[in-house]
Amino acid sequence: MKRSTDRILTTHTGSLPRTAKVVELLLAEQNNPGTGKAELNAAVREAIAHVVHKQIDCGIDIINDGEQGRTDYTVHVLDRLAGFSGDSTPPLGTGDAEFPELAQLLTHFASPFQYRPSCTGAVDWKDWAAAQADIDMSHGVMKGAAAAELFMTSPSPGQIARYLKNRHYKTEEAYVYALADVMKREYRAIVDSGFILQLDCPDLAMLRHTVYLDKSLADFRKIIAVNVAALNHAVADIPADRMRMHVCWGSTVAPHHTDVPLIDIIDIALTAKPMAVSFPAANARHEHEWKIWREVKLPAGKVIVPGVIDSTVNTVEHPEVVADRILNFADVVGRENVIAGVDCGFGTFAGRVQVDTKIVWLKLQSLAEGARRASAQLWTKAA
Image 1: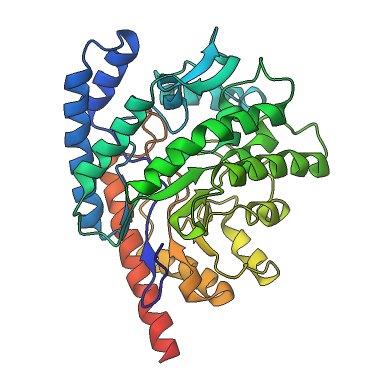
Image 2: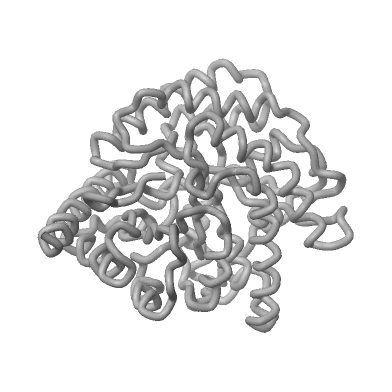
């Protein structure tokens, strides 16, 4: 994995806007599995090629497939894994019951892909070929792209357990480790294909305000420590510099007033094996948290990927704002240890649009320009 050795590199979190055609075909596939698979695959290939071109055109250095063929960043595993069945459980809340007007507003952002069954049996692969085919498709389309690096996302064991509730294993720890034992095959395959593996770990922050607000902070920290241990178990044979991870409090339009502070969880997140950790740092609830790095020592070899673009608003950040955010982090952890990123995904759930697609690309252009301006200051200062 590259570091910012001569300029600040740029990347994003993973999901990018899907084309209307892809969303339509994903919905058709959900309703009638297998009937339009060839047409869906063709549309996904076309969409990947499109977002690859757009990322490069915007000036982003470390790019991916935009998760074009997935309904979201977690539930797509249902098409690959056995052990899940039953009625859909309701999505985890974000304080909606406390804010009825907001809850009504959020109905306009709802995704049509909402099926979240529970774990009712032993977890195992039921269609590994489909998982490998997705990796191969992305690699085939992206191979040779003029980018510094290519990455591909996959949900962490703890994140899958957060989304798909356990009704089979005796303990939550047993469930998370079972998922780790299964998912390590996908993690290895992504790296073997030449991608940087991004492990999506919203569970390390989101579980606090969505599930465990009634527990003490100490008890919550024990829960996420188990999730990190299971993650490390799953990636034990993958080099740290071939991985990065993303921690967040959710990409929804929500108050976030009950988010766990980054300072309360970052030490645990930093014990995870991946070389880089990505986290939101541009939204109004967490922008100030760059200051924690004055007291949190970044372990040797680690890199941070702070979000310097807010992925939930339609305001296009001025490049000077982006540059200032980058400089704050670079001044406390060192320029070579910072890659400029985005708070969360722009297309977290297929069919849910929070940021206009054209604005997404304007935001990524501003990210690249802000990184260029920050780089000019950082490398001039050192000269």
